[in-house]
Amino acid sequence: MGSSLSPELRENLYRRLQRLEGQVRGVCRMMDEERDCQDILTQLAAIRGAAHQISLLLVENYALCCMQDAREDRASADETIARLVNALGKLA
Image 1 (cartoon, rainbow, N blue to C red):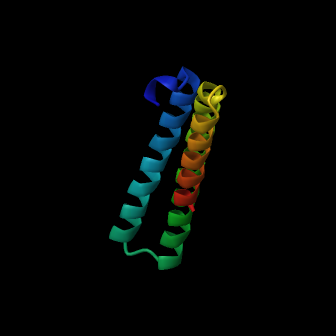
Image 2 (cartoon, rainbow, N blue to C red; image 1 turned 45 degrees about the vertical axis):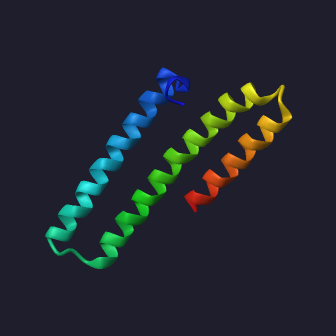
């Protein structure tokens, strides 16, 4: 899928991943500082939400690119849909 990412989407994903990386470092600092568990859990929920949004962007891109390729072949389209459903199930 690497080459199917547009430059704009790739840049968007990198920015989001860098922000996510900063959030994870922040949680590590919070733990080192022995901050309140509720505060840490709040940040972990934010991290989970951010990772979920990144995953949704990738799934959407995958669907748009791969479904175009699968239009002419119904079996391939069904397989692609099954992979998407499986990927979305793993995000929950």
